[in-house]
Amino acid sequence: MTHEDTTQTKTIYRQKNIIKNAGGWHGGWFLGFCGALVYFLQQTSTFWGGVLALLKAVVWPAFVAYGLLRFLKM
Image 1 (cartoon, rainbow, N blue to C red):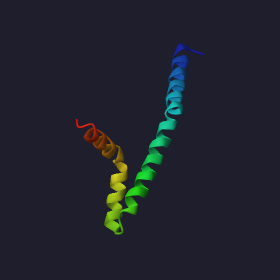
Image 2: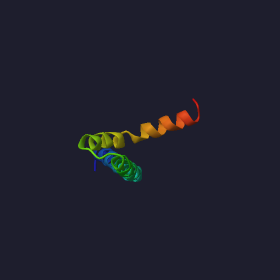
Image 3: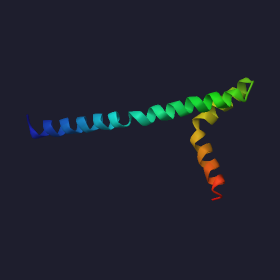
Image 4: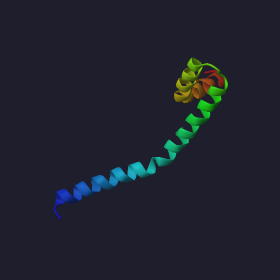
């Protein structure tokens, strides 16, 4: 095994490790997205309202940050 092979193996291992460690957060964001989508869909009854609900569900963290900053009066 040459030095180049060892370096390539370490790089591949590090990439796998990063992907493995990031998995939990993605599931949390997905559950938040689903919850926000259901919440916003319950408030509408039209097709375009549903499209708007989908867009709102995508950017729900911005709504949370805005509400928090408004609550803290910053």
